[in-house]
Length: 588
Image (cartoon, rainbow, N blue to C red; front, side):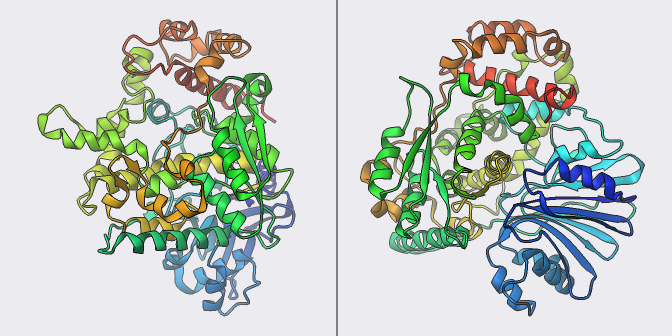
């Protein structure tokens, strides 16, 4: 992991140094701050990590990179470099030889910036394991960085909320596409790159990797053997040289399978699970069963409002965008504990998007009944997130809805994926969209931000490029068989784990938000924040709606289980984001 940033047009090393300081949790050693003509580059690495900056042999390419490449030895050999060459130097050399065509060969978790002649290249890894942002500044200047907060050091940068992004946040709980919560700040999407010329002109974002459906006509045994092989290889590629790792363990099949594979290698990682207070539902019984089966140490971190309320502004600061998934706090606290034991934390993220998880079921049912009418694919997909899509008219002010543009832009964004005729099976269309959005712009970003805030590196072997590509050769009937989701994956790893862990229904990390919001201290804290004059003055939400929600009354048009706690958490995250970034309150 490293901190990287840069500027185009009028570079200033003092400004870059200040930006790097805002990213010091990602790296604070071997800092390099320099400018060449119209371009400025800066990087710093974590203790023990190699330099994050490198130059091609001919001096035409200078590169800064955050992350690592799993095929660095192969790339080094093709560039006639020793395998011990720093990754940034390898990338600079292959870019000098092949140009942007080299990006298709990079297999890893990375974000990079590179000066190539009179252009700056920005690129991000295929699945989005490392984030990268850029912004157009006054005077034709452009800046990029690992995290948006670095732009606070740039003259002329002003924090202005993006209304369209806020609306998207209410629908997804994260912001899809290239927009961010900050007006004018863009996220470079996974598997894409762009160039910026010396005058600050930003070129179009271009894909250097995409998933392609190529269903193989093979028996189940072929797919299970390949899944197991690729999973093992993905784990091996992410184990550091010293073998020091920890892991998060929810008790679900995905994280449990990763722990089992690590244990097979004799690594015996310390495993961390989250608990949410006495009497609250959890999966600790399954997590303990896995820990005992794999003979690994298991530690439980208690996550309750009394222990994290004071941390919320810091969590928001580290997220940049207000990702409204309540799992962010457990992620942060688990990373905090794991950081005391090892520099790399393995997780099981990726199993659902790659292998056909349970959240696809209701959209597939919708397809079955589509012929009966009144079914709109994009709107059904937006509603499937179970956030605020069907409540926005009730909860938002007319003025905010008008400024945000509402849902049509979001429907237009997801429609090409849902109607993509190059992907023949609808389940694979959903998986493609979920890998791109839930994976690359929510799960992986959240994991990276929460772990990097604690100075540790995430390892997500199920979000592996080769595994993702192979998953699109698996017949959909082997992804869901009857009511068994991720069927082929479960068959592949069932010998590693106790049967009840593999074949039970998915529960997920059930954070007891409704319970927490009904009692102190979260109840009083929420009332104080959401009903404050500042929150009222933002003009986003109908205050009658907010007052009823704070009082424990469900929305008038809510359908299904009580999601009041989830709505309150989203509103709380949004208001705290404004306090931290717009009002400048509680910044480190």
